[in-house]
Length: 101
Length: 157
Image (cartoon, rainbow over all chains, first blue to last red; front, side):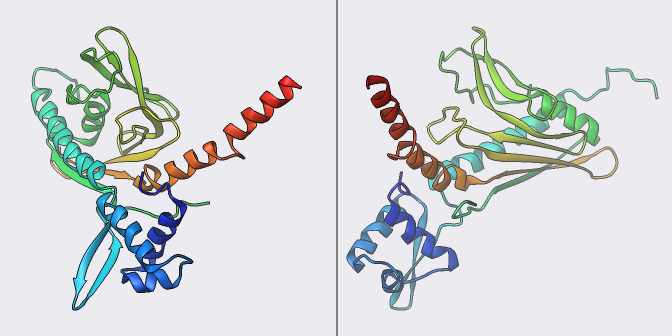
């Protein structure tokens, strides 16, 4: 898992306060800038962090749709599940079930 | 310590043609659950999904072969308004009691025998950072591994 490495977790946690360029993240860390870049790449590949271009800089931020594939899977799964739930409601309308008021 | 990071929850909603008590009843009977969504180790076809109607109750599936697999527990049971379940299925689609993400389902009357059903699947950080933290703690020399080694040493002494 991408967050198993403690340094990588610290890189990730730095992004809690907002999007940052590599340099700014590296300043607050006892590791080199290339090392931070490497961690960011792993986090990006894991779908935890996203990269955006801001003029000439690249900014890194926590992907709000984080945990990438798993969250995406759950997102579409719950759509499908709730549709099935509604279909069940429609299929079992109590028209044949008599209830006294 | 609170989880270090938080993730956007999955938010879904749907309107159904039933008043809240019936919507709650049908939802919690789970007969609508897509049968393809099963994590039974036996790979047996899914026979039923059950939620025990009380706080602390089990949420689990049963296969046609009688085998069962836990999915989570009932955190809150408030018919016909709200249901909170823990979802303890990890990214490898295995039951993992160390993680507990939450599924909150809220039923709101939407007039004329309709219900607005809102579903929130939240606390994803427990899949990631928190889950990793727990695993790291368990695997650390101070965790279970260390304790077991110490125990083994004492037993051998």
